[in-house]
Length: 301
Image 1 (cartoon, rainbow, N blue to C red):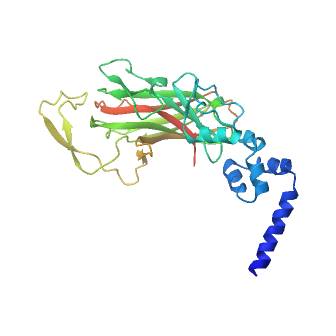
Image 2 (cartoon, rainbow, N blue to C red):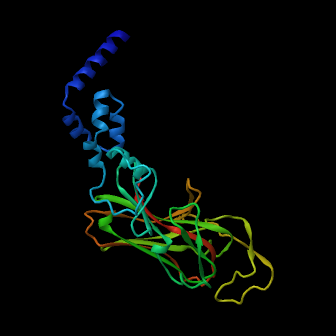
């Protein structure tokens, strides 16, 4: 029985080997990067076709944005498949140095991160409220640290023609929370995403919910009351009400946090700008300790 099965597999392999490589390549190029990698394991004939530049040229976006000098050096990718792998392995800086891009490994869709410097942060250039600090664990050299504000407003934009067509994207705020933070767990923040005439709004909580008591530094204050003069006071973080639909942060593999800001569908790339925001301007509460790396835009899984 095993001999018969092996003989049948060998015969099938021979039949595949008779197909022109151009035909195999044309067929594989109509699948996806993930399927092409699977096809390469079928047989030597499939591997030659699946690894060819003809296939991987179809998976690479024809409209890749200009990258910063040296981003594809050391060494330069020797093939289209190697170029795809390089762009899927880690983000590459664009020429402006304020945005990074990479490719989704499974679909080849373009992904982006807008750095903190590329965002509009209200009071961001006022040292009393925000500080620009060096980052050692990011493709960007600096991030924005919130020192003390009662008006939190962060906005970003990207043109829809920079994104992959006919794709559903999700936007995320990528951030960290300083150990001495306050005011980021309550009230909830409002996130919104809009493209063309379509828009969506979410409630998010940057610091999540914990039913624990927390020591709050003496300079925690509300705009509606004088600054607290004692060394510490205690308060309880809120417990989410039953049925609350609030997006909470998640830990990333790179040790940053992310929270969803909303999703959108990019149809033909001709809907103009995608506008993304995170705000908390109604509660009148002072906030501190948010460290912003940027806003990430990637395909929905």
